[in-house]
Amino acid sequence: MKNWFAGKRILVTGGAGFLGSHLCEKLLESGAEVLCVDNYFTGRRSNIEHLFKNPHFEAMRHDITFPLYVEVDAIFNFACPASPVHYQHDPVATTKVSVIGAINMLGLAKRLNAPILQASTSEVYGDPSVHPQPEEYWGNVNPIGPRACYDEGKRCAETLFFDYHRQHDLKIKVMRIFNTYGPRMMANDGRVVSNFIVQAIENQPITVFGEGQQTRSFCFVDDLIDGALRLMTTPDDVTGPINIGNPNEFTMMQLAQTIIRITGSKSKIVHMPLPQDDPRQRQPDIEKATALLKWSPTIQLEEGLKRTIQYFEGALKK
Ligand SMILES: NC(=O)c1ccc[n+]([C@@H]2O[C@H](COP(=O)([O-])OP(=O)(O)OC[C@H]3O[C@@H](n4cnc5c(N)ncnc54)[C@H](O)[C@@H]3O)[C@@H](O)[C@H]2O)c1
Image 1 (tube, rainbow, N blue to C red):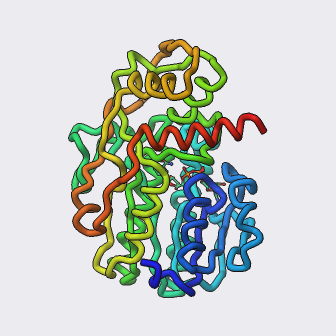
Image 2: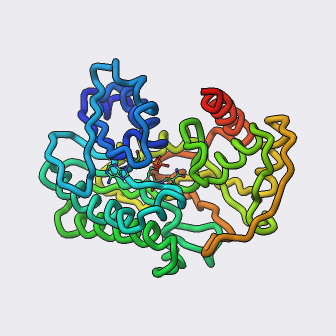
């Protein structure tokens, strides 16, 4: 894998975000030149400032809903707000970045004849009626609900990727990312792991939606990035979509209790009404990733939570 990236110029859109910043870091470690493009909607300079001193790293402020003319060897398209709080803040912008942003990046990939990897999402499965979700499952998405700007935007982006592949023979890789957590998540963006950790560190009540029996599976960021790098280096006939996530499933109550235990918090759990269209269950079927990428997650929840809690303890002190 190291050889594939060494000396290549790689574009990471959304590179100043949570996942994008870890991806930039790992690409630099693999010997690549990295061009990080971000409009800082949810990304932060502080996520990437430690990379500025690296001569192989370059950051550009740009909104990918506008065309971009650069010369690169491969593209990771990660630009898009990922948490409901942010993607629902300006839903039209969310659909625009998902769809128009994808068209612009696919156009760039076509001009350069470069492979392009799309950060898609398990949200394309909506509130799934099949469990766990294999890639063949078409999903159960409400097209007019408050989550649709993101879910349908990402679904349309997948359509565009496969049409560019069929129509223009573009080398595409579509990765369906399941819940991922780790250092550099934002403190108050409404994602459950960061929410619970911040509430626990501050000894505030931990807010669990509904009875807390809905389940999620959580992937630590290092595992996710490893999956993305592996997918990019696969032969051209491997297009995906491929699920990348950790199949170990936990209820929200289990998550809250584990975080309270690790932090030694005095927080009490309180229950809030379930948000609209909140999926009851989400768990990846990762058979394809295991077979095609020789990938499976290596960092389990307790270890990942410890590393994430350590990050938030430092970040909250600042
Ligand atoms: N973290 C997860 O659990 C998860 C799960 C599924 C899919 N994903 C996908 O992975 C990608 C990264 O997610 P993340 O968790 O790092 O989110 P994030 O919000 O931290 O990062 C997104 C980045 O994209 C940038 N961005 C947004 N609109 C842009 C635009 N128009 N032009 C340029 N940059 C723009 C933001 O400023 C930010 O830096 C997203 O595409 C998201 O949909 C993430």
